[in-house]
Length: 264
Image (cartoon, rainbow, N blue to C red):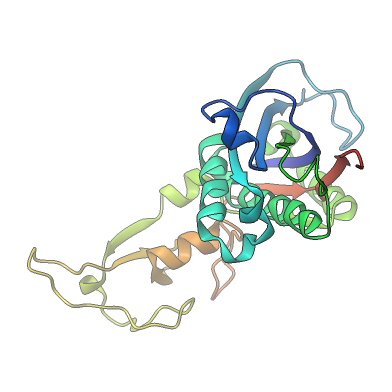
């Protein structure tokens, strides 16, 4: 088990360099380049104050980028392709533990920029076609590990909850992978999944088994695999009896966005 912190900030400015793989004429059509600088760091066990501490020099750095037309951001909620492109960036960039939350934060950021464009950001004869750069700084930090902290880990979790309002507690990837799975036709008494409330499909396929996979928690409660796996990305307890799986604690600071766009 570990305590993680996710911090995302962004600066929006005019793009002054060429966008790789994009022709100059396309760049003059109001493109918006998202460039994400990712840092993944760990803290030394002796530096155990929760915030405001020095971070180790050891880190993993990656940079990824993608670009959109302004209209795609200005109509973000109606553009599933744009949202899917950002989700793909998240999946390629960070460990599974953080993918869902990073996906939400990037969608929030794209919507924020789109709203500012709708409000008149970077308009006028000189700026309306100028390419924009959204420079994203993403930091994920392992603040503490339970095996290093012992009983103090619960105190650190409590402090994280008091300092940062957005905290979720997913099951650890290893505990999820260890769950038993089997086809629905092997079920005896259970008739439906209590997460989606749909009945289990016990229909036997031509290959000789049910096409629907079931996952059983250690407490013996059973769910559609697709349902319980999504649940365990955010929660570490059984939806029915609250049986606890080993868990991580993920704290997410509110993203900050700064705009450096000159006026006409």
